[in-house]
Image: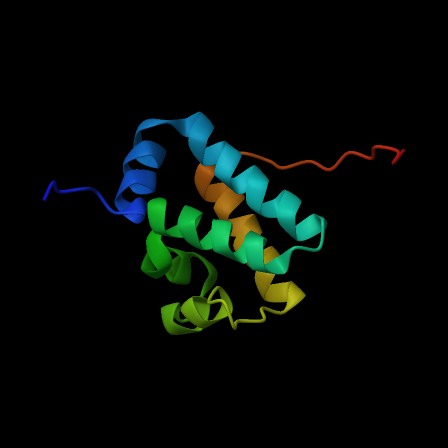
Length: 107
């Protein structure tokens, strides 16, 4: 049987090598959250966190225990808006990017 890389290892390797990929992951997560898809937004944020800072690094950056962060971004987790926006803010600072919001009329 051939050895294959796990999905997380593949995402981590790509994220470490490709800043545009990291930015796209972060953007996709926030767009999903804005569209009301909390499950997808949390899942993509979890992948992004694992591929970049890690939960321990994020915990240090925002002063929240890593176990709490793991719970927040688990499928059953329900982060408060303050926690969620605090995480997004810390991720922007870490990535040295600023997300912006634009308005588009629905058709």
